[in-house]
Length: 400
Image (cartoon, rainbow, N blue to C red; front, side, top):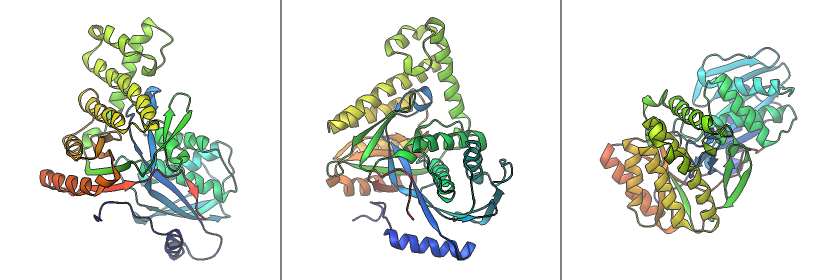
């Protein structure tokens, strides 16, 4: 078996023991220690549709964030990440919480502040975060940190919360404290993923439909390009603004239109000459992607894998040409993946400009897929891609 083929789980008792030892070395012994996990996610199809009230089709993945924590009775929160072991974040849940340095800790502060704002009486905590998700890979490490922190604080305060509500609180924390105008997809799948299933999420009413994924017939492979282009800084906000310009145009003719979700492709084509060409292309991607996503979910439910794969490739082409959020590395990985026999489909996943692609692969083709794509990408760019195969995992949970 190829070394980079599969994400390996440490057996739970070993994981608990190892992380608890690390935690007590940092914070001392005594008290009841809890452990909370939250998975990352990969989106099979439905990119840049979430903030347009559209459909997305994500699943929770094996790489995850784990938080080891223990309650404190003084209201103080002390938080350490194993990625930044020399940075201890401290604040009190008994005082007003504000954003600050280091920036990554604003996810922690934000969730605590939003839970307090929602009326949850929080205890203080000592907490250590461990992460097997690649930061900046487009696999929602930020949403996993938000949801895991929220679940840790709730657990220590003896409070339970519906996962959908926790997802909304995590999203608000990301908006208010991290300054990231994220859609609701990432937090929802991280909080509410179902093992063995992909989630079709309606980002307007937040209704969920779970579609089984039979790993005996189909494997999900994620390939990390290991690049993240800096030009993506303002590009996300710019794309949102262009979509809003499209909505404003169609609202003049039909006030019932609230988002691009409500615009039909025939309406868009009829208005092509009156729209800014860039706005037209952005709208064409979103409207087409919404249709592809709903159809791909139906196809997967019928085990029509070739049809799902075709829609994934069409999605990538649209993201590359109409939405213009791909890059040379992602395009190359998709092309290399599609040249491997036994691959049904591949596309970039996440916001773009780097990060990962996702591929649907026949189980018997996985090892050949991994070795072929790895060698080809290394030859082309001089970079070893990160490759793993993952089951569809459950959402955030308390392990101990």
